[in-house]
Image (cartoon, rainbow, N blue to C red; front, side):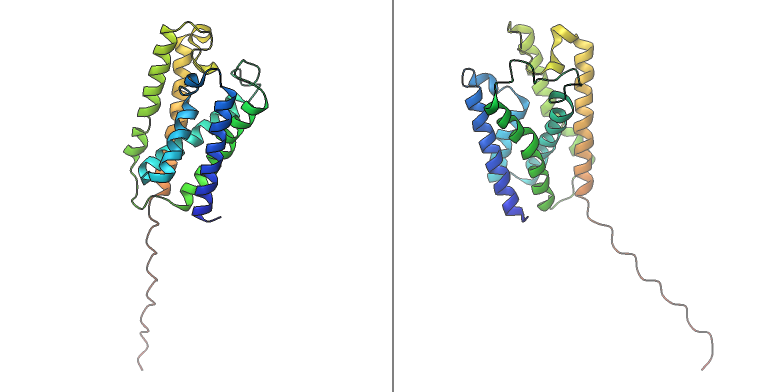
Length: 210
């Protein structure tokens, strides 16, 4: 698919996924805005319209990271942190929105990024800097959870401090940060220009006199 087709496809999938998520969470739409996935998808939708290469790269990294967490952790009944049996599972509308935002949009975003990579090569320090936003988000969620009284105020099971304790939550956060860093470093590597072709060997001169 061309870059434009991928871009339009990703925008449509993200928009539909967000709409379905809002419908599923109609009783608490503000709560929805605290979710990492929702924030990233909203920002990605804007970045597709007017974002630069660095912003688009950052959001693509976050989207791929959320996809891995969703598939391997949140939607995995053997992970110990599955959300399929909790109150967040609101039926087919919520399931459809989750699948679009977590399982369909990230591959499309990655394909769109590969088709339209940044023109300038990125450096490893840029990959490290991408951990800043998740750290701020995590801090807000933990502070909000410590001050709140709702049972699901930590949003994700792997951040549930009352059930897991801070050491386990910090370990889970570090694993997520490591995952994002590896994805970001991979993206940085893919922006490097290919090495120049090696010169063809010069054949030795024929010493035979003529």
